[in-house]
Length: 168
Image (cartoon, rainbow, N blue to C red; front, side, top):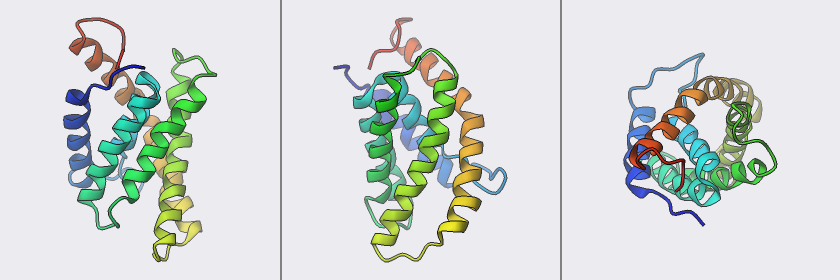
Protein backbone atom coordinates (compact mmCIF):
# COMPACT_ATOMS: atom_id res chain seq x y z
CA UNK A 1 0.00 0.00 0.00
CA UNK A 2 1.37 3.40 -0.97
CA UNK A 3 1.22 6.40 1.36
CA UNK A 4 -0.82 9.36 0.15
CA UNK A 5 0.99 12.69 0.03
CA UNK A 6 -1.40 14.99 1.90
CA UNK A 7 1.06 17.87 1.66
CA UNK A 8 0.45 17.78 -2.07
CA UNK A 9 -3.24 16.83 -2.07
CA UNK A 10 -4.66 19.42 0.32
CA UNK A 11 -3.27 22.62 -1.23
CA UNK A 12 -3.76 21.44 -4.82
CA UNK A 13 -7.36 20.37 -4.26
CA UNK A 14 -8.28 23.47 -2.24
CA UNK A 15 -6.77 25.70 -4.94
CA UNK A 16 -8.50 23.66 -7.64
CA UNK A 17 -11.88 23.94 -5.91
CA UNK A 18 -11.45 27.68 -5.41
CA UNK A 19 -10.41 28.24 -9.02
CA UNK A 20 -13.18 26.00 -10.33
CA UNK A 21 -15.79 27.81 -8.23
CA UNK A 22 -14.66 31.36 -8.96
CA UNK A 23 -12.38 32.41 -11.80
CA UNK A 24 -12.15 29.56 -14.31
CA UNK A 25 -13.96 30.66 -17.46
CA UNK A 26 -16.61 28.57 -19.14
CA UNK A 27 -15.67 26.63 -22.26
CA UNK A 28 -18.52 25.52 -24.57
CA UNK A 29 -20.95 26.42 -21.81
CA UNK A 30 -19.30 24.53 -18.91
CA UNK A 31 -16.46 25.11 -16.48
CA UNK A 32 -13.57 22.66 -16.50
CA UNK A 33 -13.81 20.44 -13.44
CA UNK A 34 -10.35 20.90 -12.01
CA UNK A 35 -11.00 18.85 -8.89
CA UNK A 36 -12.32 15.92 -10.89
CA UNK A 37 -9.27 16.09 -13.16
CA UNK A 38 -6.94 16.03 -10.15
CA UNK A 39 -8.80 13.14 -8.51
CA UNK A 40 -8.70 11.04 -11.69
CA UNK A 41 -5.00 11.82 -12.24
CA UNK A 42 -4.17 10.98 -8.62
CA UNK A 43 -6.08 7.73 -8.79
CA UNK A 44 -4.36 6.67 -11.99
CA UNK A 45 -0.92 7.69 -10.73
CA UNK A 46 -1.14 6.70 -7.10
CA UNK A 47 -3.65 3.88 -6.89
CA UNK A 48 -7.03 3.46 -5.29
CA UNK A 49 -5.96 4.75 -1.88
CA UNK A 50 -4.78 8.01 -3.44
CA UNK A 51 -7.95 8.27 -5.52
CA UNK A 52 -10.18 7.84 -2.48
CA UNK A 53 -8.23 10.27 -0.29
CA UNK A 54 -7.95 12.88 -3.06
CA UNK A 55 -11.65 12.34 -3.82
CA UNK A 56 -12.57 12.93 -0.20
CA UNK A 57 -10.51 16.11 0.12
CA UNK A 58 -11.57 17.45 -3.28
CA UNK A 59 -15.23 16.58 -2.80
CA UNK A 60 -15.31 18.15 0.65
CA UNK A 61 -13.70 21.29 -0.77
CA UNK A 62 -16.41 21.48 -3.43
CA UNK A 63 -19.15 20.78 -0.88
CA UNK A 64 -17.98 23.66 1.29
CA UNK A 65 -18.04 26.03 -1.71
CA UNK A 66 -21.38 24.94 -3.18
CA UNK A 67 -25.03 25.36 -2.36
CA UNK A 68 -25.67 21.63 -2.65
CA UNK A 69 -26.29 19.51 0.45
CA UNK A 70 -23.09 18.75 2.33
CA UNK A 71 -21.62 15.42 1.29
CA UNK A 72 -22.98 15.15 -2.26
CA UNK A 73 -19.69 16.04 -3.94
CA UNK A 74 -17.62 14.26 -1.29
CA UNK A 75 -19.43 10.98 -1.88
CA UNK A 76 -19.33 11.25 -5.67
CA UNK A 77 -15.63 12.16 -5.76
CA UNK A 78 -14.69 9.30 -3.41
CA UNK A 79 -16.60 6.84 -5.59
CA UNK A 80 -15.05 8.21 -8.78
CA UNK A 81 -11.57 8.10 -7.21
CA UNK A 82 -12.09 4.44 -6.34
CA UNK A 83 -13.79 3.40 -9.58
CA UNK A 84 -11.18 4.97 -11.87
CA UNK A 85 -8.52 2.73 -10.40
CA UNK A 86 -10.58 -0.46 -10.75
CA UNK A 87 -10.29 -0.40 -14.53
CA UNK A 88 -6.71 0.84 -14.51
CA UNK A 89 -5.18 -2.44 -13.37
CA UNK A 90 -6.22 -4.18 -16.60
CA UNK A 91 -4.87 -1.52 -18.98
CA UNK A 92 -1.50 -0.07 -19.84
CA UNK A 93 -0.94 2.81 -17.42
CA UNK A 94 1.86 4.33 -19.51
CA UNK A 95 -0.43 5.16 -22.42
CA UNK A 96 -1.95 8.64 -22.70
CA UNK A 97 -5.16 6.96 -23.83
CA UNK A 98 -5.78 5.68 -20.31
CA UNK A 99 -6.09 9.11 -18.63
CA UNK A 100 -8.13 10.45 -21.57
CA UNK A 101 -10.58 7.56 -21.53
CA UNK A 102 -10.69 7.47 -17.75
CA UNK A 103 -11.59 11.14 -17.36
CA UNK A 104 -14.19 10.95 -20.14
CA UNK A 105 -15.98 8.06 -18.44
CA UNK A 106 -15.37 9.45 -14.93
CA UNK A 107 -17.06 12.72 -15.90
CA UNK A 108 -20.25 10.88 -16.85
CA UNK A 109 -20.10 8.74 -13.69
CA UNK A 110 -19.55 11.87 -11.58
CA UNK A 111 -22.52 13.69 -13.12
CA UNK A 112 -24.75 10.60 -13.00
CA UNK A 113 -24.02 10.02 -9.29
CA UNK A 114 -24.50 13.71 -8.50
CA UNK A 115 -27.88 13.78 -10.25
CA UNK A 116 -29.03 10.60 -8.49
CA UNK A 117 -27.98 11.93 -5.07
CA UNK A 118 -29.60 15.32 -5.62
CA UNK A 119 -32.84 13.73 -6.84
CA UNK A 120 -32.81 11.41 -3.84
CA UNK A 121 -32.58 14.50 -1.65
CA UNK A 122 -35.62 16.05 -3.37
CA UNK A 123 -33.99 18.28 -5.98
CA UNK A 124 -35.72 18.42 -9.36
CA UNK A 125 -33.24 17.81 -12.17
CA UNK A 126 -34.04 17.07 -15.81
CA UNK A 127 -32.00 14.13 -17.07
CA UNK A 128 -31.94 15.23 -20.72
CA UNK A 129 -30.55 18.73 -20.17
CA UNK A 130 -28.20 17.50 -17.42
CA UNK A 131 -26.63 14.92 -19.71
CA UNK A 132 -26.67 16.79 -23.03
CA UNK A 133 -25.93 20.32 -21.82
CA UNK A 134 -23.69 19.62 -18.83
CA UNK A 135 -22.21 16.10 -18.69
CA UNK A 136 -21.34 15.71 -22.38
CA UNK A 137 -19.69 19.14 -22.80
CA UNK A 138 -17.92 18.64 -19.45
CA UNK A 139 -16.59 15.27 -20.60
CA UNK A 140 -15.19 16.87 -23.77
CA UNK A 141 -13.58 19.80 -21.93
CA UNK A 142 -12.16 17.58 -19.17
CA UNK A 143 -10.75 15.15 -21.74
CA UNK A 144 -9.00 17.97 -23.59
CA UNK A 145 -7.48 19.30 -20.34
CA UNK A 146 -6.52 15.95 -18.85
CA UNK A 147 -3.03 15.70 -20.44
CA UNK A 148 -2.06 19.02 -18.85
CA UNK A 149 -3.29 18.02 -15.40
CA UNK A 150 -2.01 14.44 -15.57
CA UNK A 151 1.51 15.36 -16.65
CA UNK A 152 1.63 18.35 -14.29
CA UNK A 153 0.74 16.11 -11.34
CA UNK A 154 3.31 13.49 -12.40
CA UNK A 155 5.99 16.19 -12.82
CA UNK A 156 5.17 17.81 -9.47
CA UNK A 157 5.26 14.49 -7.67
CA UNK A 158 8.63 13.57 -9.19
CA UNK A 159 9.95 17.01 -8.28
CA UNK A 160 8.84 16.62 -4.66
CA UNK A 161 10.20 13.08 -4.50
CA UNK A 162 13.65 14.04 -5.79
CA UNK A 163 13.28 12.59 -9.27
CA UNK A 164 11.93 9.20 -8.21
CA UNK A 165 8.95 7.67 -9.95
CA UNK A 166 5.47 8.23 -8.60
CA UNK A 167 4.82 6.62 -5.29
CA UNK A 168 2.16 7.88 -3.01
